[in-house]
Amino acid sequence: MSHTGKWPRLAAVAASAVVALSLAACGSGGGGGGAESGAASGGGAGGTIKIGFSQLGAESGWRTASTESIKSSLTADKGFDLTFVDAQQKQENQIKALRDFIAQDVDVIAFAPVIETGWDEVLQEVKDAGIPVILVDRTIKTSVDKSYVTHIGSDMASEGKAAGEWVKKNVPDAKIFELQGTMGSGPQIDREKAFDEVVGADKILGKASGNFTRAEGKTAMEAALQAHPNMNLVFAHNDDMGLGAIEAIEAAGKVPGKDIKIVTIDGVRDGLQALVDKKFNYVVECNPIFGEQLAELVKKVAAGESVPEKTVVEDKAFDQTITQAEVDARAY
Ligand code: AHR
Image (tube, rainbow, N blue to C red):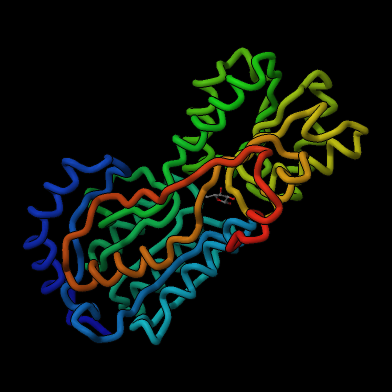
């Protein structure tokens, strides 16, 4: 459905702002974008909603599961006309996608930002076009006031904290190497800060980025094993890098899960299988299956209804007591 231009939409924003902002004031805090609801002229009243979604890439098992959840929720039979664009982990591709969505005059834009900064110019353009934005998965830092309506995703700091608490309790003599996600991304920044605060900086021998991919995680780990032969624990910011680390550790003649313990975040099937196989020691979940919740938000935003500033996706954690049956029953 095409909308009727930015002025009716902006009027709707103003009308809903009071309700939305009071929700934000008692909510869980968050990205600082703003809590206004958006377009009155989208498809909320029964028409098709034109939505542009910029996915940041396909770098991990988590991302694949996220994409599947989004695509299977924003379908034509549910009232969505989805344009989905994969940015291949490049911010410039995401910026181009957002500009294309403006040109296509979509009702709602949603995007999972690859890094936190560098969005001001394009978000100002989106705001000037009167198109409401939903931030998905990762967070941003921007000086553009009320540049997005709402954010849905996990609490990345809580995940890092949970990983750190397990290490502190179970491996008091930990000598840690940290495999960081994409530098400058929300999960890298938040997980690292929270984990480091819990375990203490003196426990960390070194850090390197594996860009959230298995291949780069393996390469980073190979170098780390040379530089820090005394390490006894790896904290990987996602499962895929932890799985790459297993390959590097085994190639170096050591036993993952014993000689070098591995703590990761995500909980994709391959990661949980590594727990069953005793090669991972602890996995904090980052649940990617929130496509249906996103679809509900898109409908409300397109209809100009107020939405919460933030929707936090629930996560669990798993240790080596997980069973094969639980892993097999996993949706992703
Ligand atoms: O933003 C979520 C993170 O991005 C996941 O932990 C990771 O696997 C993905 O690449």
